[in-house]
Image (cartoon, rainbow, N blue to C red; front, side, top):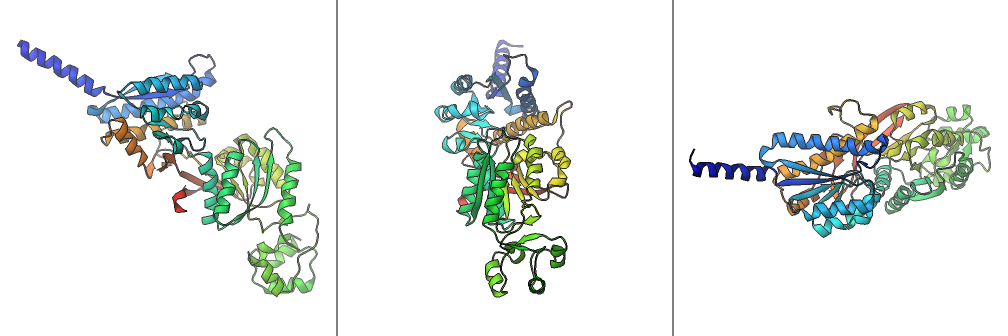
Length: 442
């Protein structure tokens, strides 16, 4: 082989290796290499497994646009997370950063993405307005604000409800409750009662009794256990909206006039010359109607048994609207005798065609797909030709109706606005479909 051909071959090999390795993505995860605690290591390693699998698939399918991962351990420390973002941001070959994953790591450092003009994609951070207020930052998991507003909008648009009570944990739950209440008011509805409780309280009797008193005080009722024959015949002759009058009388129920006659109940009662029951025993079965549902944003699925059994024992008898922490099929089924009608949002519902790695727990599978699906979104944008920071950022901002294995992504202000709505009724958990919150509708 001639010297010129040898030089040319070496040049081509060097050039091709540089081309193949020129796209780099930084990964900032809590790998917790500084601890021997295996439980603390799980989240980061499981998410990294998903990220790595997505990159392997991409590189097999795109040999001319291979991606190299650079992985760093945030140790769940905001200061270290900032050092990592600055390190990746200073490397011009790194065109995106995946992570950090915790809001506590990201919140103090949210402006670093714009400083370096590099897309920073967090798969799980849910703190309000981080991406909206910071260019180049993307939140693939809907924020607390979007979750609260989505459930309020769903109840208004799909369930045709207007009046709600709120029963919320006093710290974490407030993140959802305040947005839910604000959205209800924006849609022309009202909040009839708001009561907060401490997540450390195992006995919620006092708070639930306060809630019950507030709900009942805004309502008007007819006691079918003590109704006169004349009044019963009047009601029976009218086409009431709720159940059969004979059933209500046989069970001696106390029923809201708004449940019987709808939102126009006061006018109808006047026209029928009926008066609501002045007083009744609240320990009996009471069916409220002025308040149409209660929003309960719990802080963890472990609260479900405590919450739902005590709620049931207070005889409030309203549909429950909840957050994704209610999404635990096993615990819901164990407590189904207490749950009559529950709706909640969900940020994770795995498709049936998803191939799950062996030996991963339920939480491990979630971590894996948070990593896999989030990284695949970035890689798909790269495959479309967006191979520098600015074009990749612009492409990510236009993400709409992107289907992953566990969710759907539509980014508005760089924040995912898609959630799936679930219903648990009569012991059956069912999907009602995706619901997109769009504040631009106002």
